[in-house]
Image (cartoon, rainbow, N blue to C red; front, side):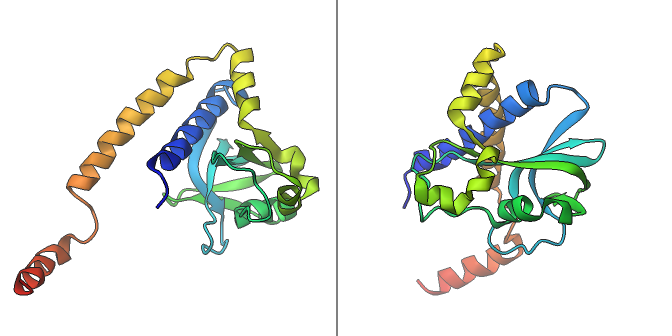
Length: 194
């Protein structure tokens, strides 16, 4: 079982990238950030949702996939297949949908980025594709950019998001949305086994 901090690292990594997108890369209020987005009609197997979509006027201008694991992407690195498909065929996608079912049109200048904590070795570069390296951003560059723009208050934002999300998680742990109709039958069967 992975150590708990791995999940926390992913959560915090995404929160920092989201803060950077909203406050440095796309500070114009005309842009919004949506979560968990994929090309419409893209096969849902293999985890096709990408972390962030940058939206303006109902159109996707950029996609960001965040990998904050502390390991060197090598020959075992698994690239999200939707990200690879966008890199290889970005003008073939008419639109995108997020997990909430909201649809967005594509743009002709769509860009898709991979944010990595650790740079890939040569095997990782082969997995990503040398031609796609210009679409890879390192976390160290995100932090440099935040400091350059005097946006060092990202920890407050992360804490605020964390507090809000922890509250939601605790509510779900106390009262899960799934399986409510099966609970009483399960408890009855379990009691019968004793």
